[in-house]
Length: 116
Image 1 (cartoon, one colour):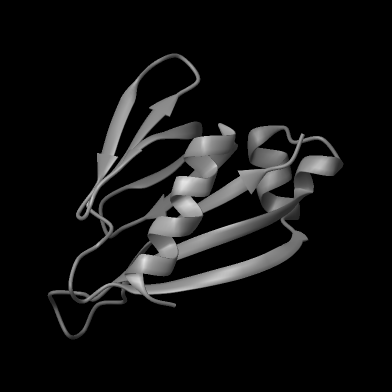
Image 2: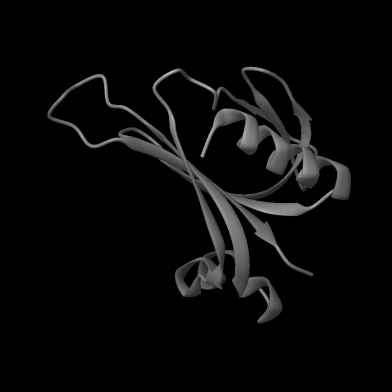
């Protein structure tokens, strides 16, 4: 998946005001929160949380790898975020960043559309 395809998906989420779940797993941080896309640029995706918090993520790093997933069930996510049965089936974009240390695993961010 190319960065341009990811921008198109994220712009679609922006236009439809889709509610998303952000799951991030890095060597020093793990996050699970609800958010919406409020801006997509050539380098960043800006998100707003349900309590109007702001988060900007530089997902278009030159070494980033993107994967799109068709709808499927996320039972662990359902438990963590209290999702309804309909919200358990979601499309997602995963961004994997190469590790700066060759002995470490890649870090990842997953944005999952929550279906009403």
